[in-house]
Image: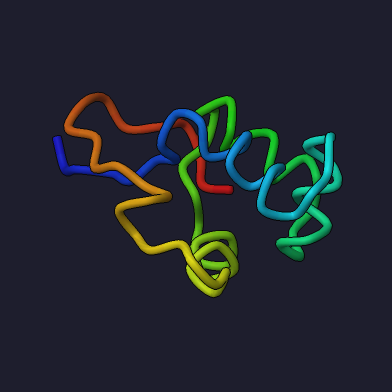
Length: 80
C-alpha cells in the first residue's frame, strides 16, 4: 500500500483554541473549506485533499508535523 496522509489526532481541538472558536464548523470557516470537508477529514473518513492541505499549511504557527501524519495502512475512501 502506498502511504497516505491524514490529520493528527487532536488537530481539531488545537485549531479551535488557535481560532478561539467552539465548533467544527467555525474551524472550517476559518480555514476556508466546507464544513463537510473538514468533518470527513477529522473523522478520517477521507484523506485531506490539496485544497484542505494548502489551507491548513497556510495557518501561522502550524507545520506539516503539527497537522498531519503519514499512514501506512489501507487507503482512505476519498479525499476531502
